[in-house]
Structure formats: C-alpha cells, structure tokens
Length: 562
Image 1: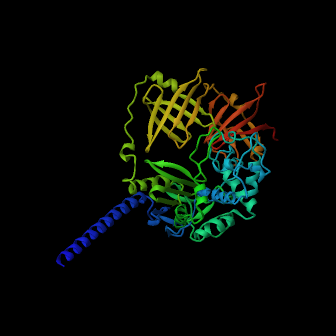
Image 2: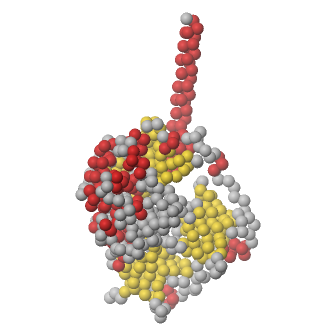
Image 3: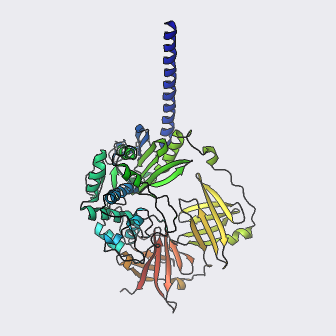
C-alpha cells in the first residue's frame, strides 16, 4: 500500500513537472511572438491579427495594434480583412468544383466561355489561367496605365473586361513561361459566374464558405457594402498614417474579406476533407510548362519548402492590406497573419514564427542559413568599370543600372539599391536580409554582355547590356515631344513635353512627377515605366512601346492633336 502511494506521488510529480515545463515553454514562445509584433502593438499604429494552428487546434491567436485608428478600435482576431491574392485559392476551388462535376474542363479554350477575348496565335486554356502560364497582361497594371486609381476610382467589371479584350499581344505564348498575372483569376471568376449562373460570391458561399461555417467570409463585389468588424487599411504618411482603401469591385483575383478565425476553418478542410478529398487533392496539383517542367504554382497555392519542410502558401497585397497563409502539412502546423498596413510583411513574420515553433523539426540548420561574410575577389578598377552601364531585362524591359562604388558594383533596379561584392571574375553577391543576391555576367559569341540576377523573389532575371548612351541636347530631346495614343489602354493619350529645365515629362492622370531618364538610344525610364520609342524608315518617331511589371510592349502611336 505504501509503495502504491509513493508510486502515485512520483507519477503526479512527473505530470506536474512536465505540465510546468510545457507552460514555461509556451510562455517563452508567447514572449518571442509578441516581441516580433512589438513595433506595431500600440494605440497609434495599425497592426495585425494572428492565428497559429497545430494538430487541428488554434494554439495561439491575438490582435496587435489598432483595427481603426480614427475610432480607437483595438485589433482582435475577429476583425475582417481584405486578403488580396490569398483569395485566388477560393476562386480556384470554385473552378475545380465545376470541373469535378463535369460542367467545364480545365483544358477548354477560355474563349468558349468568354468569346469576346481576342483570338491569339495559340489558344489559352483554363489550366493556363490557373497556373499563371497564359501570357495575359495584368489587368490591374493596364487599368492603372489607362488612368484608373485604386484609391479613388471605381472601374466596373465591364471596363475591366473591355481593357483585357483590347490587348492585341501577350507577354509570352501560352504555356511557355510562368508569369504571375491577376487577369487569369479575374477571368476565372467570370467563368464561374457564366457557367453556374450565379455570382462568384453566391457560388462560393453555397459550396465553400457556408459548408465550412465561415460566417465572416465573402467575395466583396460591391464596395458600398457595409462590413461589420472590418479593419481599415492604412499606409504611412510622414510620422502618421493615411487611409488606404480600394473602391474596385472586381473579384476572382482578390477581394475576399475574411478573418483569421474563418481561415482556420478553411485550413482544416485540407485535413478533415469536409469539402471532399478529391477537391482538396486537386488544389495541390502543380502546373506544367510546354517543355514538361513542373512549376510550384498549383490552384491558387504555392507548393514549396522552408528549411527542408514542405509548405503550401500564398500571400496577398492590396491597398493598405497584407495577408499570408502558410501551411506545413507534414507537421499539421499553419500560420495565418493578416495586417492592415501597406508596409507590413506578414510572410516574413510568419516564417520567423515558424523558426520559433518548428526549430526542432527543421532538416536544415537555421544557423547555417544566416548571412555569412562575403569574401571579395580582387578585381581592378578597369575590370569593374567594364561591367558598369545600363542593362535591360529581356521580358518586361526593367532597367538595371550598374556603377562603381568603393571597389564594388552599385546596382539600382527601380527604387532598390544594392552594393555587390565580386566573388569571382564574373560573379557578384550581397545579402538582402537572409536572401543571397547574385549577379552573374556572361558574353555570347556576338559579344553581347548578359547579366543574370537571382535572389530577388522567386524568378531569375536576365539583362542585356545596352548600347552606350549618346549625348542628348535639348534639340534632340524635343524630337520625342508629342501626343501618343494606345488602343490597348482604352484610347488613353499620353503627352510628352520638355519642361523649363529641358527635361522630358509625361502628362497623364497617373503619370509620375519625375522626368524621363535616358537609358539607351530611344530608350527612357521612370518609376518602373519603360518607354521604347519607335521610328519609321525615314528615322521619324512614329510611336512607342511601354512596358511595366506584368505588362510588356503596350503599343502607342504618335498622333496630331490640336
């Protein structure tokens, strides 16, 4: 009897010790979490809502900062956010449901459902739209170039369709490349509506949101709608913040409003199969290019790895909202982070949270991945200067400007500046956070110098060195003046004029205030916009081609205007 009592006491003591250790471990993690969000966790800042899921349960949820600065409303996990492109997985799920029911095929020509689209050299299929391999230009970029502003204008669905149908060219042939574009998912939303006879929101409510109990989730297709518990979106302005909301009603590519608590229910559907296993498995199907290469983009989901562990994720960014949903399926662990500040990076924060919770699961040592000092390879000033100059990206015409600074190459891409250290004769590197940026030079048989940039995002960028820039006198610059009209931008007209300081500037509603900067013969750039002026055989300028991110070679013709 005495032995039994002693055994019981030992057993109880062991349970107490393990429980106490678990509580201390959990408290330690909570402190680490709260430290990550500390810069925003105050009454004067927008913030974020967080939910952490393990083995089917929310093990931690909390709001940080403010949901509405103007009303002193504190952030909570029940606040409703615009989740931007995280919405795409719901549109993809709607299309997948219709495909499984035999109401459409993923290999159907898109024009079967949207016949007003132009006929291109090769057909675009629904599968191309799902995996971002269609080559279609991004309609958000097109609307912006046509003069629409997301914070003040309300382009109709009809106007969005019209500008998509105005496009005479693609960024690339269908299936040849992966290039992210919101146009594909907007069109998928339209296809769901035309096939089902219901709005995308109604279809998603009946087939996804209501069956899962997602009571605060919907596609917002009417910006006048009153949304209970909605957080406001913000952007920094000086020492304070300004409201940053969108009036656009287009759905499919975005515009799902939801909470971290509702997204938990969606996350669990990938384990409990409440919507059917066949559907959830289908959503993980990755795309393939024409050459057979498998890409990491599935049905609105990105299939990847982090420190050796499998991940399924997507992020979102629209107006003053930012969103991230990252799932580690093998660990049954997920992180949902929604923010109402344009400068907040929920994906970066979420991976730091994974570092806290999954450190003992990682197959790659965290310490090994931390930035190491880059050892410089000795290059002469002459060798460095040979690599300086302007380089044009082969797809979208982005410019890389290389100059010499303190025995290193200073690289400028748009507003991003990097100082690159030579590590070999033709390779330069630097760290940007925990990302290793690498720039590698090569030369083809014709003497064309090429620079390949890796580490900025998921794609590699190839740049070609431009011809030396000629001296441009005010008289030479005057040749570029005039009016330029594009049928691909709803007949938008850009005026290009020399100002009092003899600098070329664009006059248009959304035009940047800065002057055009000459990059190469007949090539100019400003704020991510790249202008290539076109000449006839008599050398007179007849038009221009405009390229921005996700929309290449939009054609303008030079016109007379009284």
